[in-house]
Amino acid sequence: MYIYRSASPDDTYRLARRLGRIVKGGTLIALEGELGVGKTLFVKGLAAGLGAAEAVTSPTFMLLRLYEGRLTLAHFDVYRLPSPEAIEELGYEEYFYGPGITAVEWSDLINSYLPKEYLQVQIRRKYLPDTGEIRIITMIPHGEAMEALLKEIQET
Image (cartoon, rainbow, N blue to C red; front, side, top):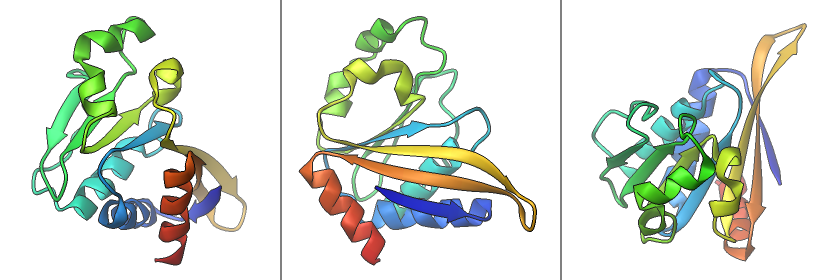
């Protein structure tokens, strides 16, 4: 597990950009956190690290957006799915088990569909009397490859 204290949106973006620079194909990043906590900002940094030129926007109403960079980034937002099973209609397997990178916002709503190996990213708000509101970003590896990825991001 890796716990990162983000003092600003720029901090969150930079952490995700670092991840995007080192992440390997076939990785799923499962993002969790309440509305407005910075999940889409994290994906923006991830896309930048992958070298995607197109601006990342929330796929809330489209459910899935694709971005081309060093690897293809599939960005899911499953918040508006009527049921977890509705992910099947999106052809999720192509992305969850494909050669690109997949980022899933609100992944906790579709836990049973996540692969065995993935990187769980929890983003939480915390208020500190001295500095104000910060974000606590907790990265939890699921599987050996994700443990290696987490070790690499801590060293960069």
